[in-house]
Length: 184
Image (cartoon, rainbow, N blue to C red; front, side, top):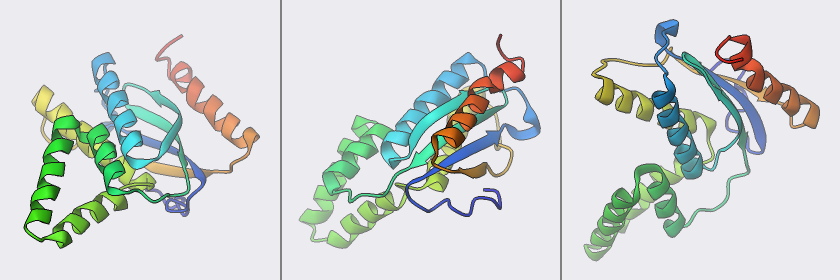
């Protein structure tokens, strides 16, 4: 995160987030961009962070994110969101584990796991951590690549929630591939 990210945890805020591939190498082809977009959508569904706009380029990405007010998330919704992130089979296995803990009288383990998932929700930093780690792991596995894929921290700039400010950032994000000569 950049020093300007003073509002990362504040709810009901908009953020222009950028992050780059390490060494500014052009790793992201169409297939990788499709995978990254899928991961972004799934992380958004899990976390409650809303993607208002995005641009995925060959060596970096721009996201305009809305961080809504957090709301209470009960156990069934945690499992639904976990399924969106990790898949139905993983969520079913986790639900089974929660049942086994309960049957053994271990409500503390149930509570710890649920609280850990809830702490990852409604947070721009956690959203970016999920996406960057997950994408790096998948990319490294598929491409026999070793090491980090991303250039250090991401940058997060608070955007005032006015139509003019958000429209300006959306226009910047939308035109970024044209300015970078990545498309016509």
